[in-house]
Image (cartoon, rainbow, N blue to C red; front, side, top):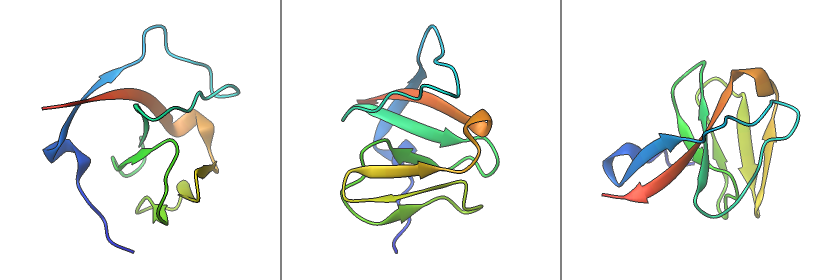
Length: 79
């Protein structure tokens, strides 16, 4: 699994108002930032992805969040 630093491609902005941990939204322009290891992953990953600490992992358009309280939802815009 290859790790790409998405901050080199996108600027990220937190959603306002921030969604609760029990209702994390997903869309093509929404990303999840793991607050444990600071990795950012797309909320609908098409390839196999995982953050360094294992809180976020996914594949085939679905992502698993082990600890939603440690996730920030951000919107990505190309630089």
